[in-house]
Image (tube, rainbow, N blue to C red; front, side, top):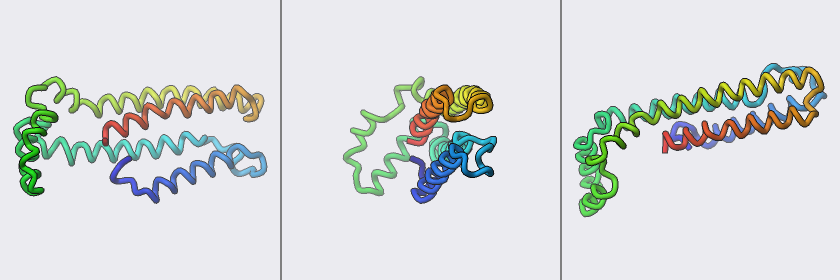
Length: 172
């Protein structure tokens, strides 16, 4: 998904989240049984790291070198890359299909894409913490082995999807 996230670290994070979620659901260990953190706290922290990494890559790799997606700078950079790859025949096709020269609105929407991803992150965070509070109150009253608790847990999982999609779109 992101260049900065090595596959080993992603697998390690997923494994740790899986173990933590399983340990939090069992009643055999008193240490993690009443932990104030649910699995989604750790996942959201990890997604926040990935968001910061994607924003950094967006600014360093796209916005700064292209002078805010200036069509002339992007065209010159693309031509230089194609010359270095001995592929100057494809430039006309690239210009026809991918140039932003005639699309100023698309250029500005592209530059504003991190704003929409951050807004999605904040909206998802708000809703997840509301469901988390409800999960804690259900857990205190009847425990985790309740349908209502599981329904909120599944809702939290679904609420994480827009953030993942936004990160993939931003860094893709």
